Length: 221
Image 1 (cartoon, rainbow, N blue to C red):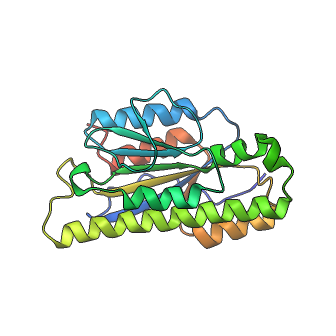
Image 2: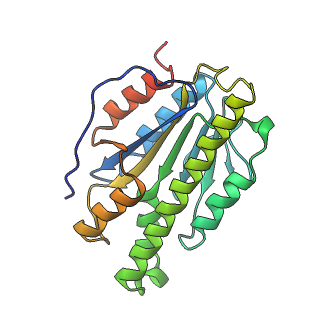
């Protein structure tokens, strides 16, 4: 099991146009209902949610990565091929239209993407090194995607557009990963975290993560 420093104190919302990155390290696969509840609560407060996952969630809408979250809506970008994930994440940003609104909360379910790969007979024949490279490419692609989203927020703020009209103080992102490193070695897992998720606030309790998101996104009212 991977040990991570946990920073779980409650903090006030960050300044406008600021992106806050979180990691949820799950000890099992039973986190989907918690994710679903957080997404639903966010939309009740008029937030725009982007859920990037390989799981099927009983949420209002799924799309193919060419659209972004509409105001007060959940959009699900469902990924079914780890090899195509980097391009899908690039398409997700390229398909952004200003009138859709930028997401306030982005959840990248890397846990589900890895689990889906490990269940596919074709991918099971791949070497461990190849699987690890695919995971690294996905992580890099998401890190790039969230940076592009952050830049869009900054551009919108610099141009005088209201990016906080729904009470948001910027973007919160959550990367869902397993506490177990497999198929990576513990050393590879730590390297992945250091390269693409350095400085992210780590949680092993989804309730504490959800409470922090509620504060930063103003979901407590």
